[in-house]
Length: 141
Image 1 (tube, rainbow, N blue to C red):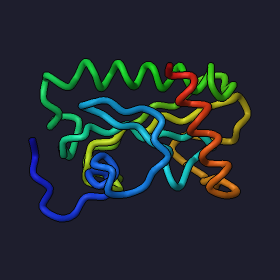
Image 2 (image 1 turned 90 degrees about the horizontal axis):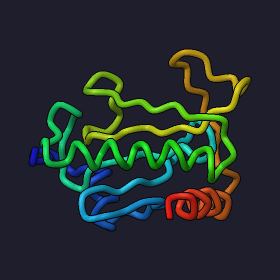
Image 3 (image 1 turned 90 degrees about the vertical axis):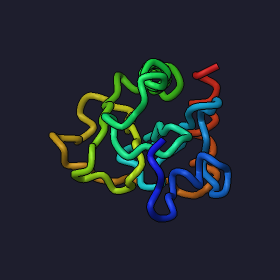
Image 4 (image 1 turned 180 degrees about the vertical axis):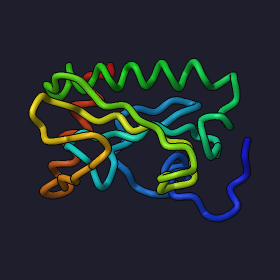
């Protein structure tokens, strides 16, 4: 496990010390809604252990990470009615939090997302964010 040099927001979410709209959780991983979503339902998948980049992720966690990524990509379609998803991970460059995280973003043809320009679409309030989290949780069951 890579040790966090400073307090880590995603470690705090994974440990339950920081509130988040969690859509998936097990012993090794947690997925929660991005607070600044590209589109509503935009979810971040993180390992509970602190690892900074994908190359740092231990082999014992790789299969679970990808399996959860697949489940989340499917949930974007089945739970939110998206036509597909955008799945992305930055390693160091453009990594806003130095803790491995995978973005899973619902996509629909004509949604305006072009290349890597990510306009943000905020939730109206906590209740709307909670409803998106619930829909994704239901789709993951």
